[in-house]
Length: 182
Image (cartoon, rainbow, N blue to C red):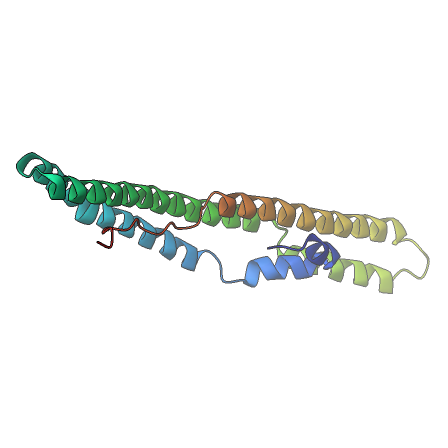
């Protein structure tokens, strides 16, 4: 997923620019909304009616064929309910990813702050013939180092949150067979 050696080797302004000029959360927010819509559709349009029909079928039909049909349909309904739960987890984790990104974006030092730091440092360095600006240059360099450390920490935390969200999403299961093939 992420390669810490990659973002830890980048300059602070590169990590910051990547975060600030990236695509943002728009597509993830839209995806979370679509997952929510799908949950509602599966729940009210499939699971609930299917369960009601299955209950009526069991009450009104009997015999070996009806039992086999009921058993197959019950397994399918169980699969639909598991699917519904997986959709809920996917929706929750997609929303979690949006929050993780937004938090990382907020925690990252802005490109403007880093640019200002470097511009101030360069200005002081060009006028430092007598060494009077050396302490201020050192302070700006220390701040720049802190920006770099912060960028790596932000990206590492974001990486861990993304990996956690993705690991919570299990692979989709195939539906059970409805017929025995006989």
